[in-house]
Amino acid sequence: MPSKETPRIVEPKATIAGAERTLEPLKLGTRLRDVRKNKSWTLEEASKRTGLARSTLSKIENDQMSPTFEVVQKLVTGLEIDIPQLFTKGDLQTNVGRRTVTRKNEGKEHPTATYQHELLCTEIINKRMIPFKSTIRARSMDDFGELVRHNGEEFLYVLDGEITFYSEFYEPISLSAGDSLYYDSGMGHACVSTSPQDAVIIWVSTPHPY
Image (cartoon, rainbow, N blue to C red; front, side, top):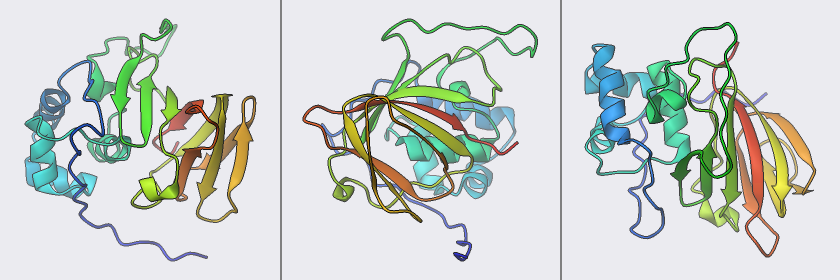
């Protein structure tokens, strides 16, 4: 059985100019600061809870850094919220009869150097499933510093193109349009496109354990 890693403070690499587009629907830094202050947490307290360096949190809050999706996962886990609460002031919070629609190409964009994410159905918050569509920009494992790990489980469905899915405990597997995969996202994982065009997939994530 693999040994459990000791939590450590992580200082992500700053975004390289031109490697990512900053396309948040709201200023993410402002939303992060609002959430933190609503909890009456200092930057030091937020750093301890998220596992991110205080300087990283400060840069994000001051719009000096566009976080990767993996950093966003650390934020929502540590701040005890879900992803849409960082990107929109969703107000459909009741648990009876909720419904929301995202029209084609109208999701909340969150680009990174490896994935181009489009967050879907963000108006409903405090939900157990986080759906998003992703274009896989990565072409090799060299594009990742290390395998991605975060709490929860994920379902992946390939809409277009082909990918190779890498994971910590299994051999790499090739997936093409129509193929799907379900996995423990606490296991290190990453996707790269292998088709001529960047592959497009649907991801459904449960960021918090039930």
